[in-house]
Image 1 (tube, rainbow, N blue to C red):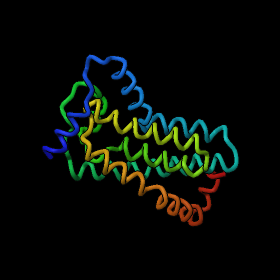
Image 2 (tube, helix red, strand yellow):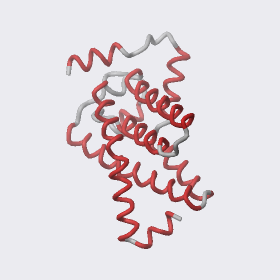
Image 3 (cartoon, rainbow, N blue to C red):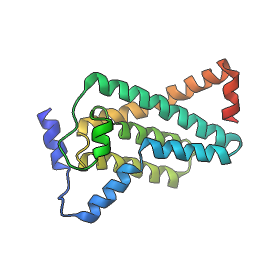
Length: 179
């Protein structure tokens, strides 16, 4: 734990670097669950066919992932690092292990990697890494929170696809949302 805290503290940039701090705050917020949920709902409303089905799939996976990560957080109950920024996170979710943002960023990166667009894949993985870094740099998580969160996110995509497919076959009314 002390090695984790030391490594995490070493990754926190100097607070006098205001532009870097602002950039990290924007990147950190870019992976907030409500932004993705709202974005996917709007996309789902205006999309059709396979794009609509993929939006519903990603929303489903992100929802299940959020419940899973929150369950672990409330079992482990590791407090967040001391810090001033991110009061909304500190109040609504005082636990840091594992990082929901890391899990979400990685599962989103895995999702977009399936489109076999190299430029998009590189961009989204750089974004995911920056999201993870921002969480430590802003003193919201420890490095181990990010590693485990990222591994959970990486491992969640394909089981999520299988469960989603099974649910579509089992509950035919869900097909409405996936077309």
